[in-house]
Image: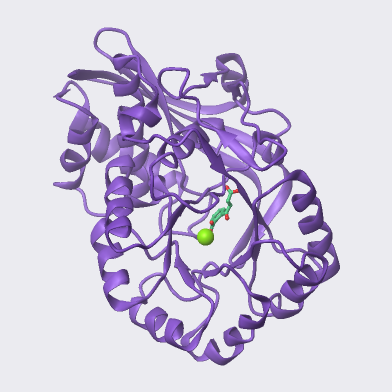
Length: 374
Ligand code: OSB
Ligand code: MG
């Protein structure tokens, strides 16, 4: 199924979060989200979303660097060009442009949605997924006190979440985790440091072992696979890598070094669905379980993540919270929901993304728009 990309519309929408989200390196109150809409020569179209944040505190990319990369370097590589399939787009972007994976992913993932749309098939099926329901975990931001965090964790348990992840940083770790473990003795719990620790914090981090956590996510710097491996040898708790895993080759390195026993896959972080499947396959071959991370996406990005998470090795709960956790109102219908027992349904009964973009709402929220044509 070939397609020719005739037009690309980039827009920035401003979407206020229902409550601020704090991680070790900063707080987000309102998302500035870059949306991509692709138009095929024969009129078909599809949506995608760039996961880059407002500031470079998670990765070096931001919404502004992504807009620049897309308009200046990436869009010209695909406009007016005919592709045999979405799998052929990534290599065309990679050959002349180093890095900028989030910008590439925004375009590449939208091409997969377009391929699904043109084929009249669900995106999940086009990606090779089969799982009908995905277990959901929540990612709780850093709170002012351990008691406030314990209260949030209890509420999450009551909503049905299968796993509760706590953001931590030096000064907001052991006492916070202890407070949550005390009120939730049997809940699957994990922590995510977003690279806030250093190698010589190993002794301190070993203090987390007593809480029976499912994993410690990204304790050290993204580039530092070797020190993650050294840390893993000192801990009982499995390490999970997020920021460090930027490609299938990087996943192979991490597995070979023993830097992680679990991998978080975000298609937006690794350059799109193609490389995300590559990371998935590398991990599956080494019996490393994976789960789908989130980046506070709107319902569009979430649709892409849910589709990817239907692949077989996504055996752990993903950060795939329902729309209502983030927004007063999402920009898709139906909104994303979670069943009382903590599952999100993969929309195998609808073609493409499986949700409809609420164009009026997107128009209302758009603060900037750019149209690129062949
Ligand atoms: O590290 O997983 C992360 C949000 C922004 C940046 C980094 C991360 C996160 C989350 C949120 O944990 C997950 C979600 O979308 O609910
Ligand atoms: Mg993370």
